[in-house]
Length: 150
Image (cartoon, rainbow, N blue to C red; front, top):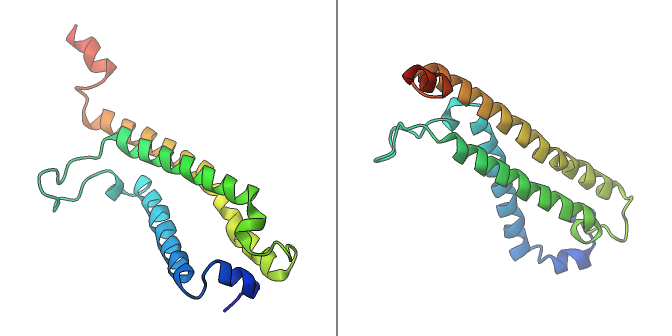
């Protein structure tokens, strides 16, 4: 289904054909990456599943989770910026930028610009929550414990 794209642009993108598989793979990868963000909210993002040999049931290091989330936010920022600055080549609607299909596509992609700052906000909340929880669960660690040893 062309969804407003010209036949020439569909041929250029190899749709139908290889381009179709690329679009499907890109959609799956995007949903998988977005789903990992849920690990910053739910408990499964704090502990390695018990069924994993050797390291199962250990807690993920805060720095590792936060570092990967910040790296993901940086990558998405670059992708969104590149998409915005090259929209006429990305969208396939360069010859009809105000058509209904072009407006619909832009509206569908617009929320992607919110992903990086929201991911950073959720990451900061994750770090704050984990540090507070770890401090309460391990009172023998941290600055207060060090002062008690003296």
